[in-house]
Figure 1 (spheres, rainbow, N blue to C red):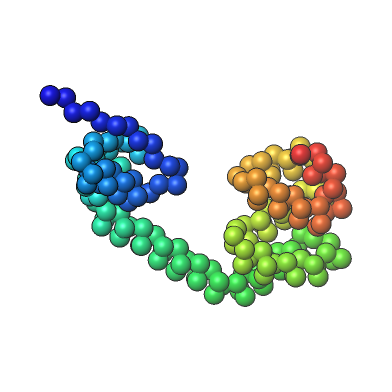
Figure 2 (cartoon, rainbow, N blue to C red):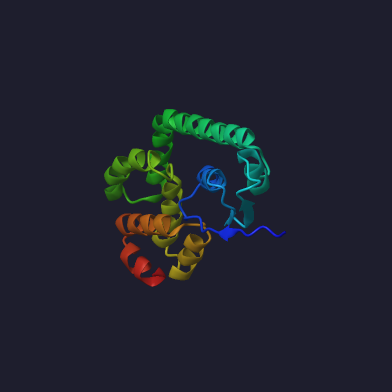
Length: 181
């Protein structure tokens, strides 16, 4: 006799844990159900937490959780190491700014350097900005500067941030940003 399963749809917000628990609730009610999670079909009558994790991630739940914990700890360690380096990095980037920027921009640059180093991008945009400003301030073409910014691998957000900085730190920045947008 064929088993008759009811298909259920997991919400986009479902985790593996919540999907498995939902299927187990069906099983406890004596109902047969199945659903797809990340392309893997899970059945209420055979699902276990470890089996689901193994099929979806290639790891048991405890292996997966341990790996996630290690990632969090590594991230926190790297974040702390970066935060500890901000004073040293600030000096580096302030000096670098003086090599590229006109003197009337140094005070503002010095003000934003530690802020940019402490943000999401950890100062990546500082070098990106200086690369573009250097091209623009040395009579480079907008095409050269555009090729440089496009080759820097920005997300939409970091692209916008670098453009805002270029506008502020290059006399040709406004024109350049209009050109690339």
